[in-house]
Image (cartoon, rainbow, N blue to C red):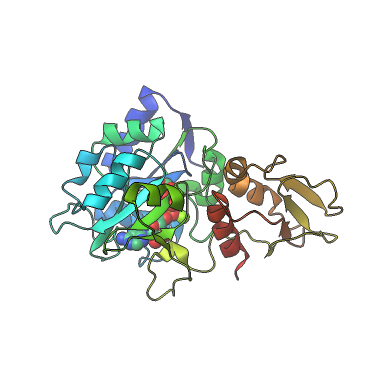
Length: 320
Ligand code: TXA
Ligand code: MG
């Protein structure tokens, strides 16, 4: 199994040395754990795809510690600068035109002329990115299509020895991935709902933004992480459950005292708090995903605020 180390000067130095050698390091971010590799090293990037079993048409997010680090990678737009200063460091990813001379492996952007970039806010992530000193390609640190990791042991369970080192930053604070915004056309579009909400983006841009509604086809994914089946546990998932059947595991939200039955239950947030629910989502799904149950029944979650991201992940978890 991979080594799991607490965050300190030694572990950060060890992690950045591994990255320099083209090896893979899982590190905490405020959203979920990332599987990091040197974005300029084609072999390191290839081993990210291999470790995850990820289709190579699905591009990776490039992580950097500060805005200036992006100047050599992407073409800035005025609106991208506005969003960057409003929400970075933080749970937002911008898709922008890739500079021709960008020293990022073409495989990392799956041959696209765009690049997805993000500055995470987690202190350990920033420490690692600064120590390494170059762009780090980092998808969520889970096997492709499966539940995203919000704890170091989720990473170890999902990826095993494919990752050389896991930096332990405890439980991810937000628990769902960053909001991915396509800024490559004159109307920006939210490709993946996440930690930064549509209202917040609209307030900064001073105009409405659309949210990618449909599911992408696997052949031509707008954002390939939007493929219908994703974030999937092994068990079937039943959504908007108001009753629970025998043998089912129940993932409740809010007051569940009147909902009887089920072989097991966990509650995303007893007090009906969407922020708390997002932080618990992947860990609780993982905990209920046991072959002794027939399926996971999930209570309705309001489709507002972080509920947009939660419902997006739940729909994909339920799709087969
Ligand atoms: O919160 C997060 O974003 C986490 C942490 C580790 O930063 N990362 C993450 O990466 O969720 P991943 O690979 O699991 O999801 C990246 C998403 C995918 O849906 C991918 O298709 C999309 O971003 N993406 C990457 N590059 C893109 C591009 N050039 N154009 C459109 N979508 C892109
Ligand atoms: Mg992912």
